[in-house]
Length: 247
Ligand code: NDP
Image (cartoon, rainbow, N blue to C red; front, side):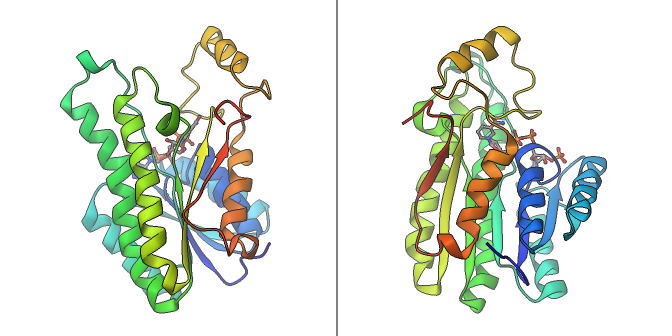
């Protein structure tokens, strides 16, 4: 599975799943832009891992929820590299709370980053991909977008929204040889899930047929497949990476 000569942008590439995706796609030969919003030290660590794996890449700071920043960053990639071939919309946040207590700000922040951010990035990236007549857009959704989760109405709505966005974009872009797919992780060990108590983690494990939480590399493998030539005939699909917790 080669991405030799391809330019890759991974949003939220500085930590967790995004970091593993950056390293994996760089190992396949892609030149990887590792986006982050607030943590340059973490992005630098990702770049060190990319280099240690024999790959190339660079850090690129922008807020996916800010359309001006997104457009400027993707314009810069186009100017520097002449192409953008693979976009992984991975940046995401949580602002959990029961419906009765959830503030409008919590709703807006999660929808803006997790859903609108993916729209902004895909829209800007698709301009370059259409001209090239080749592209891969991979949206990181979640098991929660399918199964729902008490206390995550904002997050579940954003992640379910990403599924509709994925299928609609797949239909719009197919004639230009751009595939659009989703990857839906279950519970993956990252900063996002590190706050879960041992008790809750044990309960979650009990609900997973494979009886363990996933790793960022498990998700990166699915993204790598969809980005590669092996996945060329797959579009508008969501690949679940969840140990069987949702079938
Ligand atoms: P982490 O919290 O470990 O990392 C989040 C990443 O997103 C960081 O790189 C962060 O950058 C970046 N980010 C956050 N907000 C923005 C923004 N506005 N603009 C640009 N970058 C931003 O998350 P995970 O690795 O756990 O999750 C990655 C994706 O996978 C998310 O979309 C999440 O919803 C999804 N997911 C995760 C699951 C899990 O169990 N962990 C399960 C299902 C889905 P910085 O370092 O600068 O803060």
